[in-house]
Image (cartoon, rainbow, N blue to C red; front, side):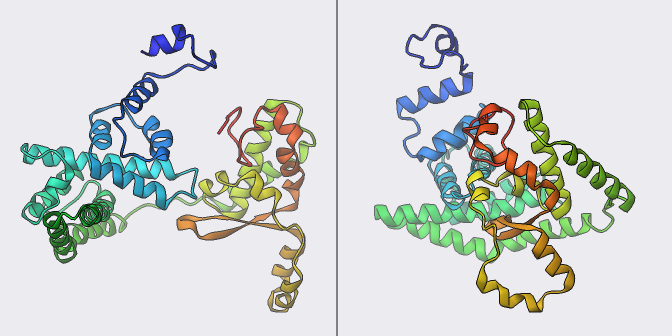
Length: 349
C-alpha cells in the first residue's frame, strides 16, 4: 500500500510528499470505518503520531480509551501545540493498563469489563505492575498517580454512556466502582507513590549554573544579536530565531514550551503602548519596576494549566523580532504558512 501511494497512485496530488507506512495504514482504517468513535482531531493529530505497535492497537480499538482521548483533546483544544501529545500519552498509558488486565483475566477484552466493583483489586494490582511497582516502591510513581485520575475519568465515561443508553446495570457498576476509587485508591496507590517521590527528592542533587557562566552566556547572546541587522537567507532566519528564543528564555526564566507556543498573530496584536487606565498604578511601583515598564515590552503568553504569564521583551531583541515577524522575510525563509512566531526551519503547520 505504501509503495502504491508513493510511486504508482495516479490520484496523488502532491507527488513530492512521501506517505509513511503508518499513515497509509491509518488512512485505510479510517476508510473502513474502524475509527468511527474517534473525533476528527483524534484522527488527524493523535493517531498519526502514535507508534504502530500492540499498545496503539489496543488504545485505538477500545471504546472507553478512545473516548478518554476525545476527552483530553476537548480539554486541551486551545493548547494546539501540546494537545496531541497529552491525548496520545493518556491513551497509551490506559492501553498498557488494559494489556496487563487481560493477562490477569483473559475472559474480558474491553476496559469497561474491568471497571466493575468485583474487579477493583485486579485494577489495583494491574496498576502496580504497569508502573513497575512492588509492595513498598514504584519505578514510575508519577505515572501511578496520573493513571488513577484517568481510571476515574474512564469510569465517569462509562457512567455517562450508561445514562445515555438507559443501561441501569452499567450505571450502578460505574457508580460503585467510583465509590471504591474514592475510598481506597489513595491507600493502595497514591500514598505510596507520593512517599516514593518525596523520598527521591531527599538527596537529589540540583545542579545550578555559576553566575559568571550565566553572565558569559548572556553577553555572548547579546553580542550575536547585535551583529544581526538583516536576514538574507534561510540560515540567517534560523540563526535569528535561535538567538531571540535563547535571549527571551534566559532573560525571563520561562519554560521553553511557553515561548514555542507564541503565535505570530498574538505577537503582532500585542499592545505596544501603555493603556491610560494603568497610569494610576505607576505610583505603587519601585524605581526599578518603573524603568522596566518604560524600556521593555510585555507579552502575555499561555503558561502551565492555561495560566497567563508575562514575558519581558528587552530592547536589544526588538529589531530581530520585527524581522522574524515580517511577511517578506518569512516568505523568503519558507515559513509563511506557520502560525508560530518561532517556527521550525522550513516547517508548515
